[in-house]
Length: 253
Ligand code: PEP
Image (cartoon, protein in one colour):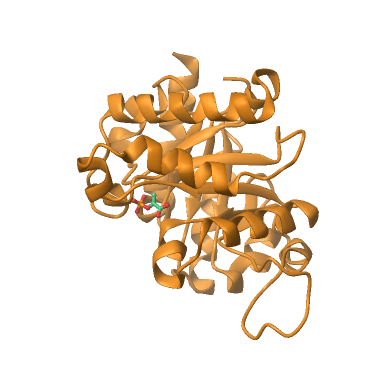
C-alpha cells in the first residue's frame, strides 16, 4: 500500500465539549504511532474545538452542502468547514443516504464542491443485507461509485473510499475478510479504470463496519485494506487507540 494506513473515527451525532478530553488523549497517543494516519470527524459543533486541541491528528466533518454559500438554512459548506479547521469530509455515508435520501448525484455534487473548497474526501459506499443476499453486492457498490466518483485527474491525497456494508454498521457484525478482500479488489479495479493504475494506487480503500480493537488486526492486514472508518469504537480513546495500535502492528508485520 502506497500510503500509511488511515484510521478515521466518525463520532456521528455524539459528543459535547466534555468529549474534548477523549480527542486530546487520541491526539497525544497518535504521536507515538507515526506509521498510522489518524483522524477524527466530530459533529460540526466540535470541529473547531477539536482542531484547536489537535497537534497530530487530522480533523474532518461528516457532511457538507454542495453549494458555496447562500440561503440554505441549517447547512454548512466546504469553505466554512475549512475555516473551522476541517481538512477532510466524509460524504455518502449510508446514514446520510438513508436518513436524508441522498442520491449518488447529490453525493457527487458534494464531492466536487468539497474538493474545490480544498477538503480531502472520504466517499462511503456499501450494500444492504438484502442486496448482498441477492448476490448483487458488487454491482450495487460499483454502481454507487461510478455515479459519484469525482472527475478529477489526480485523486491521490484527495480521495479515499470507505467500503461499509450497511448490515455491519453498528451491529457488531463484520463482513468476512474474504468478502472485504473481494469487494476492495473490485473497487480497486474500478479506480484503476477511472484514474489509471498509477494514480489510483495512492487512493486508499478503508473498511468500515463494527471495527474494534479485537478484529482490527485481521481486517487491516488484508490485501487492499488501507485503513478503517470507525463509528462506535471511536467514541472512547481507549478503544480507538486499540485500533490504531492494531494498524501499526499490521504495518510492521
Ligand atoms: C460507520 O458508521 O461509519 C461505522 C463504521 O460505524 P461502526 O464502527 O459503529 O459500525
